Length: 486
Figure 1 (cartoon, rainbow, N blue to C red):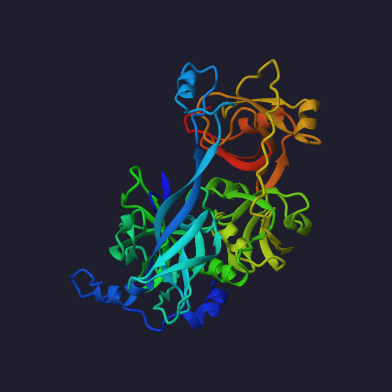
Figure 2 (tube, rainbow, N blue to C red):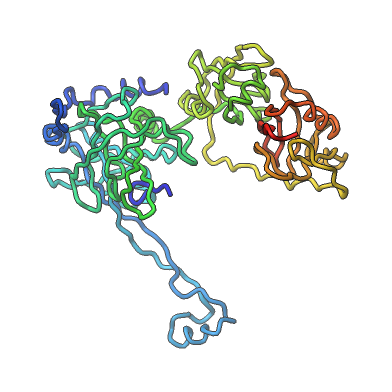
């Protein structure tokens, strides 16, 4: 499982300009001689003093008395020995917990960067420097989406780190971390960059740097240095089955972090852009169905009603290829590009629609962090009599008027009543087929017989892309007919 390091872009330039006066001019470089391992001694001596230890006090609550029912056979036992007050169980008491993390000094006047999860719900944050001085820090702001926090201590002329460019990192390059694993201050560990742009579950706004640097509880929030002694990331997550290091560590790229830092310093919070679309990844088969040569871009499978994209004319089935001329190579890149744009900015989306490119102007809105996701509607009831499965193994039936009304469909739509055998694609009982994509254009699915006839004409080994409704979500899926199937 993924843990916070204790047991688990367009605004980059602006952030660097804002903080350029705060950055040390010359980083320390690791020495590398042909045929030998790198020597990090100079890097440690130069950059180590800019790394800090962070001790956090947090308040928590727990039940004061056993929370058991009066019908429980042990209820009378606990009551007699004073473990349950008269009037029944209940009551909570407050107690303090202690945790540790790492951070690094961004400016000589006391600004410090760490992870948001290190200082989350803290009542007191103490920063300890390498020269043993201690300061009570003020939390300027936190951003949970990128796991970045900005602290401030009352000090001057502090050593500070040098900010690097994570885009220039190469897989296989040596990197080092300095932090406080298990409370051991100023510990340096080394490894290589294992991968870049790593996507993790529920973390689609951060293209993580994966390394095999030893990261353990207490390393969270500490810097990841490149060979030049520049900070290229913030150590944030580990993959572990034990709670400790297992060779998979993940760092937030420093350009992503600095975008958040700049906003936290200016206004104490981070704002992000949104355009009101739901997207999915393009596969090779679905790209062919939409008439694209390469599976690049983000496929729009839903448009928010009255949202920025809907007002601009973006439609379901569009493939977003570029944002202001910047290529969108995969669906994961689009949220990162859009969220980095200031709300209120007008941008140009280049979309692929029915075999041609089209430029559409969209005004970016502000993302609301606490918007609750809509609950899926209950599935449409199945007809009493089931039809036979088609070549794809799908048992289809026509929607009734009541089912269309429940699904808010004016016409068309074919219900997937059952799935027989192994179906190569993302489809399940209760789904509603809305359209079949042919030569880049959608053909409305009007009846079960129509869809079955179309599938019957497919050659062995062929594939078909369907627009599917599941609950409140609409998406595209490609079904493939095996070579041995009839």
